Image 1 (cartoon, rainbow, N blue to C red):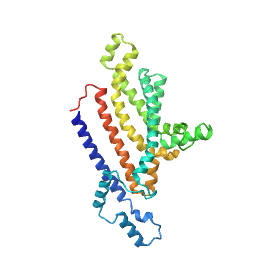
Image 2 (cartoon, rainbow, N blue to C red):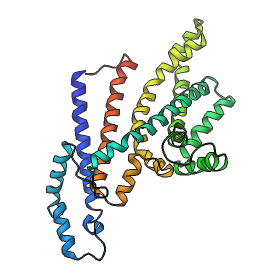
Image 3 (cartoon, one colour):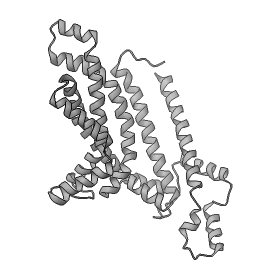
Image 4 (tube, rainbow, N blue to C red):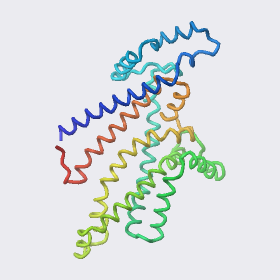
Length: 305
């Protein structure tokens, strides 16, 4: 177990290294930030002076090594927009993004898992048709369009929920539903498919022949064996929910890292973009590691070598 964890951690560092290289390369080819930070009429001498002060006059490999050395220490420099340490800004906005992603995840699990289970148990029924329809429509529906429609219906017309912002619990309802819809649809389809496969297994027929209660067969035997793919999706999707919150936060003016990153990209605020991406990457890598370690608890047949 310990050797497996060490290997996974080392692989995670390799992933973070590759990501940092990709982010640095993409930002480097996006343009000269000195010309963006100064007004168009600024003389070339000021542009050159600012470029030197920021270190962009040095070779790219030197710039990257310096960036990597600072990133290992958690230092990304000051945001060019706000004049504050970029990592502090990201950590300040991160709780709002985490809150939104967690609410979306819980909503998707609370609604999606029971609907998927019932759809499988009552295959061919009306509720099964409802679950399949939700799965197909939910995956195909653009989140920005859904967010706008929810605002028009529940905020503008019915006036029961706020249109944007963060404060009370009701401010979280529409953004969480919007962010969770695609994941909820995946959960319904995955649980339904997994339950149907397990319910057709020989040991399930044997359990029925022995006279076991339907609840015991469906939940203790069938549902438990569908948990591994569900846990895998939850771990991978929670990281994507954090990254996917960019659109939802923009639609609802939710003060999170996603909205902050959009503003940073628009202004080519390199330190803030780099800090945002690294924090997101760290979270996704950690989520994947936790999922791997949970496998052994869900399926005793899995052993780590």
